[in-house]
Image (cartoon, rainbow, N blue to C red; front, side, top):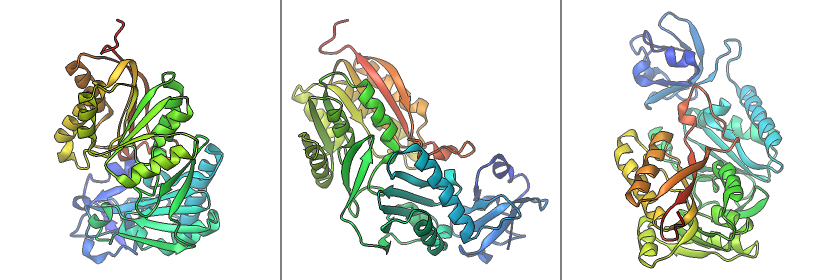
Length: 398
């Protein structure tokens, strides 16, 4: 079937992006209602120039996503398998053990598909109706390319609602594990699956956690805010920190953090509650730390949330800066794509000025290389992390 775009609305695709928005489709010539997600559409410009093959969801704002730009290669099961195999080759080259994000959606030319590997367990998420329609072919490809013992679909993201898909947890093959085993930067962790966040782990922060080991002050007292399963705290303890405290709203996450510390002979303190409230309480108690990690969930999931998100990032950083000793390390992160790197840096600086601290950025990070960036799709670069040296404060020697 043919999907024709309006005049001038082929620019993004020609530049390398893979999305077509519903208002870019010439619906008079090619009505969206004629498509179902299992159909492969031939996308053309208003002058009938071939742009690519795509799957289409007539009910979604992003109405089509390209799967292939080769006019001679209409996407089929073999193409999906080849893309997964290509993605696997990159990760196998980058990582010593099979613990990484295997498929990162558009960046691997598999839009709407996420696959993470946890040794012999693969956990996937499908965000679009087009990929859902191709799930059987994806499962066969994963079995052939990766040969995991288990493949779980943890399809519980809000993106599925936008595509009119149900949220569900299903097992394609194998047995559903209660926990996942992760090896990150040589450290072994476990993480919950069914009740865990995302696919169970945040592989995107692996490179930033490796940088933490390099920059951590000696014998540091560490506060891990929005800790989840304690990856930052345990990494710090393994790097020589003398104390670590985890803050999270989830009791289950804090229990996982305590178990992960214990498996390496460490103990972490745990504080359950809202991050803002806990930081306020710690300041009232006069607590001080040598390193603080802020790794909150996305405060700006939509563009209209941006003003409130900017204020939230500024306040969170301000509260953390009040707790840091002189020459302490602040690691401030944002996974909000709508918040630009410059906006996060501005929030850190505004927070520092408010509490009379001086901040030096000593390292700038993003997502790990198993989350490659697509140069034409800015949405694939979502994670920002600043490692900052903080001067002034209670123990200032300036």
